[in-house]
Image 1: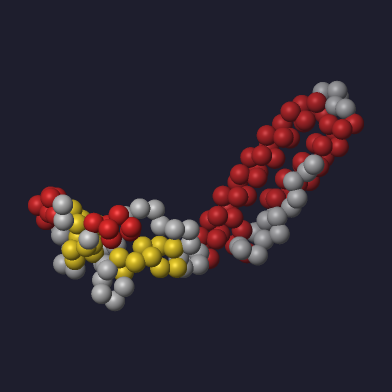
Image 2: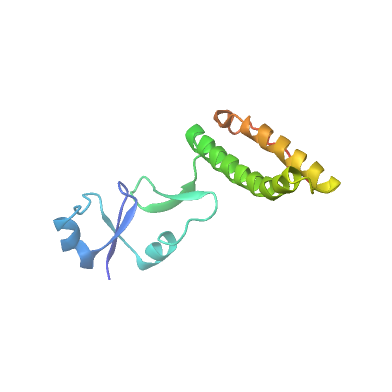
Length: 140
């Protein structure tokens, strides 16, 4: 089995499938033959903090992953905010039932207030400030 690597697409191509590639998305002009060992080493999951790239000889190598972009950090912060909001909503709902029915214990009333305050603080988070966000502490 002959495997090729393209520095342009950062992908591996099996020569057996060349006709399919040519008929479909095309066979990369810069595809170079690599060894079975290189294919095994670089077609697996990248080590933590690294990404697949190509050296100046167009061979596959692991390179340090670039830091996340501001957009990626904002997206991660938005996802975190959404997850934390769902957690707060889940905690507040049954406590709110107890409070509105007038059957809440002192601990339930205190917890209800803590979770509502947390949710307000969470909603005030400006995710565009990522990664410089001070997240409110989860209620006890």
